[in-house]
Length: 287
Image 1 (cartoon, rainbow, N blue to C red):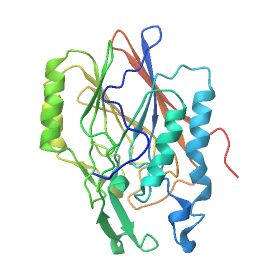
Image 2: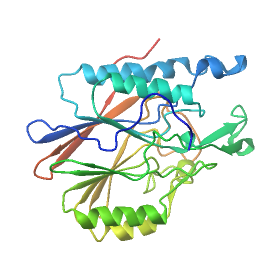
Image 3: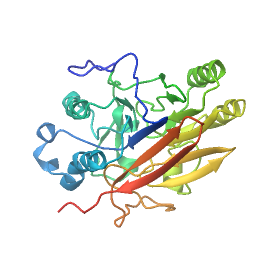
Image 4: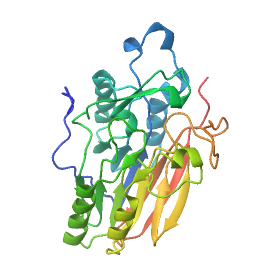
């Protein structure tokens, strides 16, 4: 694991729900980088999108809505750098709201030659920053939130490991509470051939295990840089827009969505096992 300084995740994260409703803010795919660590040729890369994390976080928390927990579902950084993580964790800590972060592919893989076509780039495995959680339970009075790490060092695609499936089975077996699963990679196709080639593997084992438990209600993920709401085997799967650039939906070839603004997702989980969710976007484009 990468050695970290400053913020250390608590062993137990205890969000406080208001009026029996747990309100969760999901941010994903920040793709932050440290400007000073970049070569001159790459500085000011996507400068507008670098501002979006701060702008969107401020926008979300400026609303009158209670926020009990912030979940960041991977790709915090675009290139692995401990100082970039320090900045992100420090900013999240400043909110005073409990938060948890899991890894995406960019958190464990650097792309060398990112000015080249993807197939010509070199993927270099990087160690996982220890502040990114692996198998982690956030237990609340009425819901259990299950956070897993689907990233594979040196790869863009992910994996739901066998030990992860076993851990999830154990958590679901031990508690009848309604459950939400959070990970980075998508576990059912998004309908775009290129990104579906980089979804999580071993999903058949995951879905087979989940079929044993009716209390798993919701799955949230990032990675696809777009908004989708899908249903599979009775489970609602929410894919959330990136807190940076967006990918064009249903495109077989890699393409940016030039029209869609960065966004985030709200989830409300009530004390009866009901839930609702919606996406909000950047109020105004950043000049």
